[in-house]
Image (tube, rainbow, N blue to C red; front, side, top):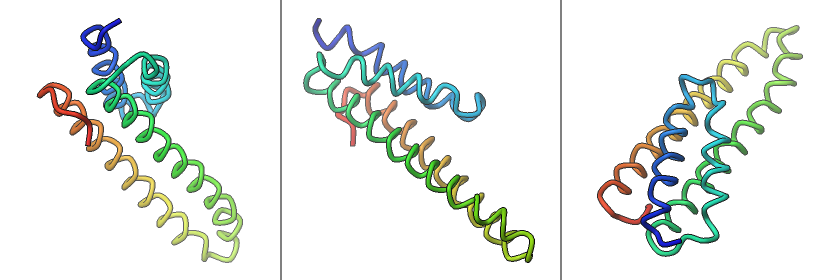
Amino acid sequence: MDNTTRRPAAMGAYILYLLSIPSFAIFAPIGAAVAWLNRNEATGLMRSHFDEQIRLFSIAFAWGVGLFLLSIPAMVLTIILIGFPLLWAIAVAGFIVMIWFTVKSLLGFLRLLNGEPAA
């Protein structure tokens, strides 16, 4: 298949990423799966978008896992009250990752609409 048949899949993955906030991140792995399934047969412009979508999800997922793992000892440390500011800092970091993921998804979607490669 040529790249014109891959364009809706790339748009769909970006839309699923953008819908991850109201869906509590349920749609993000589905978008990553769409990108991953279409990546191998895509070339040029579409390949750059699929690669970027997979990279974007991988980074956000790694941050999510890391922040979750950090929250475990922070919850234990709430016994001596130091855990509360740690949990707050972890929540702020998670919010920043969420904003970054959303902005990068939106910029990628706009670049795809303009026929530009992913940045």
